[in-house]
Image 1 (cartoon, rainbow, N blue to C red):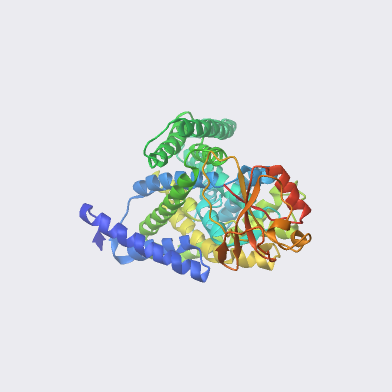
Image 2 (tube, rainbow, N blue to C red):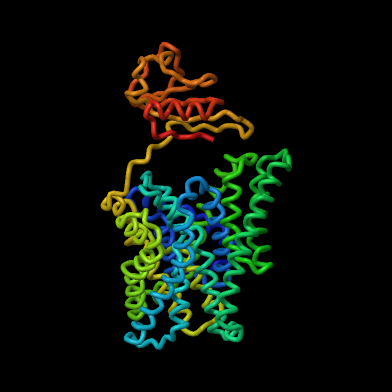
Length: 498
């Protein structure tokens, strides 16, 4: 067994990152979740090569990584996309988490004695609380790596739920640890519930205020070295989490809301910041999954009691706890079809976050905490293997998938430009008045800058003949008029470049 020492950490870290990236490439080719293979790489190296046993360090790194993942997820979420589904998304992220925890806890309390474990309901509820949220890292990475659209606004709904339900699971976990260690018993259930509400309200409020402060600071502070904007935004992320926690709010919710605010305002170096955080988020996901894989003792995972209980818990979560909570939460929302409800139930992926939250009982040194951690770990692997590999297949089977058209042009517009740039595909109706570009009726101050035809790009002239299927890159400062023209031409799908 190889002991991690100072001079070896960089070498081993580089090896792990290299193998993880190669595993991600393999995962993409075979349709498996990349994060599952990252976890597998950590387990493989921890099996008989690297000795790593620091729950406290893993918890700390996981906290940092989760802040980055949640902020990046919020920043990539467009408010206009989630606006129509905010109500069901928030219900799933709050009530859905509580219902999932209660249903799963009842199952654990019922089944555990048959396997020889005397588990009280509070202990069962703690185990269920750690698993009650869908994992944002898994959902974001899988949904965004698949070039597949989902009907009924399911993609923004799933991303909103997974990005905003971790705070509720975190609070339930901490609350149950407090009760089991007798630190929360004296305050009473009503006070604990009030504390949860206060944390949510303070988290949302501080996240919004700090997000607005970040937008103001980035736009007002003129930095000569543009790379420092990424450092400035990182400072706001960690300040959002830590300061919100200091004033008794939920730091994870604050980070997500801050990302949502920043991502939906025009900021200096916006594209550069998005590229930086996309890569940095992947790094944090890899590091978090690798460390969790290194931490787990694979020999304990294959113990009969862990295999049976972990398998039962994971199976029940997939086929009962998650579907029941989803169908109950979506009862007031009639616009979702039954197929959509089943798909939402299916994409209740578990990932690094449940494993990370399962470390809290270990750090608190609660009885059976190691067993709980192993059960959650095994259930997560089951979820990623069964649900993570069938995200696209299930959408196709339920008739909810459609091919998502990729942008043909990669344009980086300066933040100060007021003109709008769009990409459309030529249809027969557009060519009704003529096939040459000069015969196409477009608003004034509108220009077709470039055409993409079967992978070839060229700058058009007025006499250029258009063909059905051509992709046009159009720039204008008459956005409303152009949008109306598109509608008259029967063009429904308009890709906007920012």
